[in-house]
Length: 365
Image 1 (cartoon, one colour):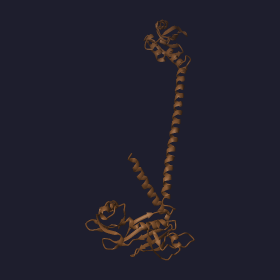
Image 2: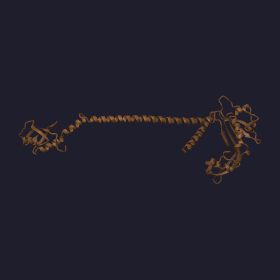
Image 3: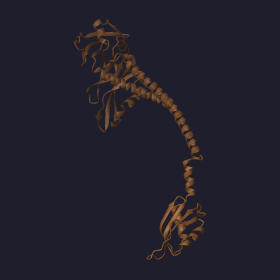
Image 4: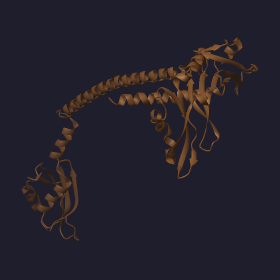
């Protein structure tokens, strides 16, 4: 079950990354205004407006006079003019705190720790400040290269209670975001600006929660669509399996019917088999004749037509051939189908014998 928290964390990080990307892309095309607040030594805030890079086409940014006020439990005194209230709405507020209200410290780390400063500093909040990490707002300057392969980082922190009135004030005016800064000296003594807090409330798209909510809806819709597609694919797979089983059953039945037909009495395969068994081959007939005829007999022609064989050749005693063929179990009803002749230039008699071939040609057949 440990997979579920990991997936939840993964989705949370993905939503945050996409939201930041959407906000960064949207801010390039939406009119933006920044309001700078500077805390004076007497605790009063001075405000001035800074127009962003993008303005609404056809409109000119309204210049407002600088404003000074104090905060009493998050409420400005004196009350803000209507023009300033409208200016705060949807703007980004960047507040500069007095250095007297912020603790600073110079930290020293190995140079290879530059990629892990967030985790290393966060774990030392209890040691560096009188507050815990959840009760403080803090930040640090960019690392400065020091001797002996080390880096120096200027750390700054203050209590959340110290900045809470400012946060209530900004939220009541429906600002887009609040960033809180302070100024401290780095390792070389130069002043450096350190961001302690960056709190978004509204985005360029209208609300800081709208984009994550839309992304969650997209993820939920994608999950529902994936589940539906799995169910549909499972249903169609089951249906296809049923159809495949039915086709295989029909094929098996058809094959069985074909086997029954092939075993019938009048099938062509059976007739061919019977004919093969009943008809001797020409080679076997020729072998049988060579065993019957004497060595003084020469065959010049041999014709096999159905169950008859006709032999034409030369011999010294033609009538004896009829008797020899009749004595053979392979031939029956031997007779001359043409006259026996003897020429003056021939050494013997020319015979023409015809006989019926029997179906038996020995145990080997």
